[in-house]
Amino acid sequence: MKMAALCSEFGNLVDIKKQLISVISLCKERGLLHSAKWASELAFALDPLPKDELPPSPPFTEDDAQDLDALTLAKSYFDLKEYDRAAYFLKGCCSQKAYFLYMYSRYLSGEKKKDDETVDSLGPLEKGQVRNEALRELRVELSKKHTAGELDGFTLYLYGVVLRKLDLLKEAVDVFVEAVHALPLHWGAWLELSNLVTNIEMLKSLSLPDCWIKDFFMAHMYTELQMIKEALQKYQNLIEAGFSKSTYIISQIAVAYHNIRDIDQALALFNELREQDPYRIDNMDTFSNLLYVKSMKPELSYLAHNLVEIDKYRVETCCVIGNYYSLRSQHEKAALYFQRALKLNPRCLGAWTLMGHEYMEMKNTSAAIQAYRHAIEVNKRDYRAWYGLGQTYEILKMPFYCLYYYRKAHQLRPNDSRMLVALGESYEKLSQQVEAKKCYWRAYSVGDVEKMALLKLAKLHEQLNESDDAAQCYMLYIQDIFSCGEQLEHAEVSTALRYLGQYYFKSKLYDEASLCAQRCCDYNDAREEGKALLRQISQVRDQIETPSADLFAPLSNNNTPVRRVSPLNLISFTP
Image 1 (spheres, rainbow, N blue to C red):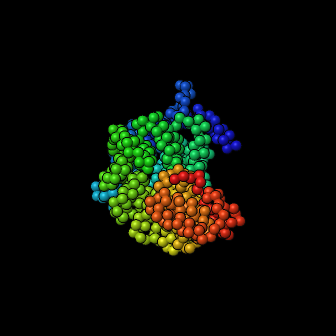
Image 2 (image 1 turned 90 degrees about the horizontal axis):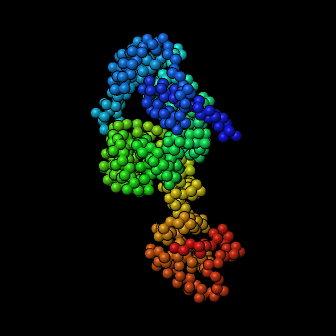
Image 3 (image 1 turned 30 degrees about the horizontal axis):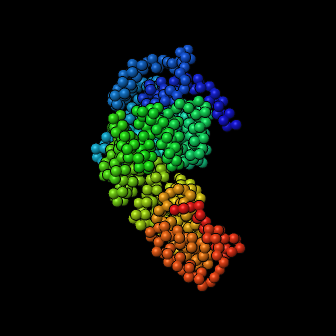
């Protein structure tokens, strides 16, 4: 049913193509280059239109004709980043287009001065109070026009940006919603709105226009809110609706797989993206994160060299080089490149988080805390920064702080076992064992990526003298490790076998105890204890003669003591 509705919505791809071509022209005229780029990439993914199907030029009013010369001159200055000069020649113009460019030039002039002052006076970690001085004036002027109902979709977007910069977030959300209603095809307004949506309830409460572009926005929001299953379904629907050639969608799906740590899928998609668009720099920092996690040094080195050849002064290039040096354990150099990325764009979320990681590696906890806090200021949904703060305070032995930050990370990633294990450790340090046990079990239930939850849960049961539960967890842990095909020389498998051997021995389940003891002999750190246990079992068997049982046969239920775990069956798992 949903698919049918979507197909009808996207039924006429020719109309969508026409709309995209029109909005590309409108964005270019106003210097909104990123929105023009997004629409161009999407239009390129659709079939070309015949000449007679091309959309007509937008209507040309008397005001447009009056302002044409001033607008042409000012736009040439604007393109050369001479914003004050552009604004000077646009002052007094009446047309909507000229008014937008006049206000936008003043805004960008203020932003440029702010960035220059920030770079000149402050290091990237210092908290500067440098502000865009033009914002208050712009807000006053735009507010009057807004009240009079004289703002078009583009100027509403600019008004929303000014409100967001002044931290008037509630008003900004309302204005951005108004902007997307006034001009649904302007992707920049949707993106700004997405940065202000904090949770799924807020997303559902927004009154959004019923337009095909809303599906792109919803897919983007699901990715941002870590609702990856829903995001992937949306993107799959968009591909089936006719956008199969879109590099934007491929990159977004790759980012979604990166967010759920499906590294192989994400890598395959990024490699496909590189084949289709070899000079692309967007999202390559995310690609480098994946290569880093997989320790793929040659590939990361190639990517870094390749991006330097394309554009060495792009934020993404600096992040890729930083990851490359980090993988080589040259953390000072890595931090230097992340700082360079932040000089290029102080709102680069990934660079703040990665720089925090580097300072952690260098044991500079105060700098790491500052970097992670900056990341959260840029985007409160960044679970990596919350998790990083938790780890930093763990090093500083401040478990209450840890608990707060790990909880925040867990709220953003409820099904990420790493957050749950970290929460469990914090509760354990605060002697809240019941909560710790819940966290460890939940981490195992959602799919423990690091295979540590059961081990920690077993040790906690062991400390609390809950021997049956501890044995159950150790048994599950061993089966988990063996079944996933990891190296069996796992440091903690011997610990589990050692405990189970003693547990079965005390429970007088000598066959199982003997099996565990034999397995202990395969591990250097447990060999002597395994041999000692085998001798003990042999002595006990000599004292009480019992009919010999098949060592590998599982015990029948009536021989198993009440509440005790069923015997360990390791026949199929040979170390």
